[in-house]
Amino acid sequence: MTHPLIPEIIELATPIAAELGLELVGAVFQTNRKPPVLRVDVRNLADDTSLDDCERMSRALEAQLDIQELISEPYVLEISSPGISRQLTTDREFISFKGFSVIIKTYTPYEGKKEWRGKLQGRDQETVYLNQKGRAIAIPRQLVAKVQLED
Image (cartoon, rainbow, N blue to C red; front, side):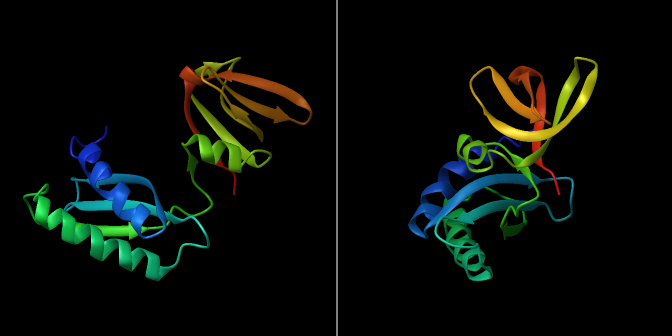
């Protein structure tokens, strides 16, 4: 379940990332840790995401979080790159990784399986498309729990 502050944090962080030439990929607030950890993933749009990119985003976001006082308790801010082996969520990622090997996991079995492997062909509003050794598979999007790049 997403923490209730995440939409506000994303709204605050997105323009900061854009000013730095970065794309905000996602954010998670892990309140089960002591101290809680706010993790924000960013991607450099022009090059590989560097440690310098993460440091610049950390300084800029931390300053704005302090000014906005969104988080009242002590916390740790982590800025990272999502890396290549991760879950696909945005339309851009589904376009960028077309043809890549993926694992699709469903909430409930679809055609008797909860895990599908193959080459990503894309997605639309209703369906995620997969190619398994030349066989086209169309999995209803409402059943898809996650799509992850295969290692």
